[in-house]
Length: 291
Ligand SMILES: C[S@@+](CC[C@H](N)C(=O)[O-])C[C@H]1O[C@@H](n2cnc3c(N)ncnc32)[C@H](O)[C@@H]1O
Image 1 (spheres, protein in one colour):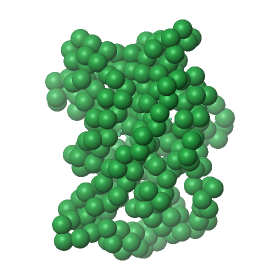
Image 2 (cartoon, rainbow, N blue to C red; image 1 turned 30 degrees about the horizontal axis):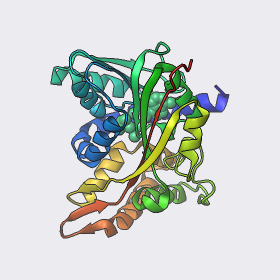
Image 3 (cartoon, helix red, strand yellow; image 1 turned 90 degrees about the horizontal axis):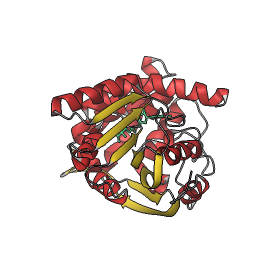
């Protein structure tokens, strides 16, 4: 790993640890937002009862428990995340739900703490785009899968299909004194839109050794009662935005949040707040006979 990759991940871990309680608290809203996407991800990875499944960048474990339910008591799920605080919260969620067949690990998706050829399926929900080297992340999932094993990842489509997220990031960058990103830079490694260029995901999956690669776009509208509920979610949980604004003093940060609130309010109506999002699901398979 390069020195830059190491520093990037250390900063990401600190920021996700800080945002972990907020992310965990908003699990019901995240769950509703990602319900259809999660069902599609599990179906596209073809997860079956009794399977061993790897969940990379598992966060507080919302989709992990869905995977555990799908594989049933005869199966097993390994959940890996960079943030020790999120992993601890996932463990607590599983224990409250009486789910015993999940192994929780703090670890880097680019250097997975798992044995080769040891999983029937691997998934990653909204994690891979945050990796500084997503190809290495995919190579690691390929290594972890048995020959014939299935994979499905979920990442954000581009800024035009995710106007709230794009506006959030652009406004945060402007207040933090960072230059506006031109379209060519929006896909910079480790950022929310880093895997959104047409054909990029399929090319990376092929390069990592996968076959039968197919990417599908899915709408995922984020619904909240009011714009202030959405702001509360972002302010406590949206680590990439918090990371940008962490360089501001309290007054400057409040000015940024006021500006963001004004811009997010346009997505509100008498029936509530609804932010359009589009996510990309990529499904593939490790070929039979592959090492
Ligand atoms: C947007 S959250 C998604 C969490 C969870 N999959 C979900 O959908 O609720 C992104 C997660 O990626 C994790 N993450 C970021 N970089 C990572 C890396 N290099 N290795 C493992 N996890 C990573 C963060 O700690 C965080 O939990």
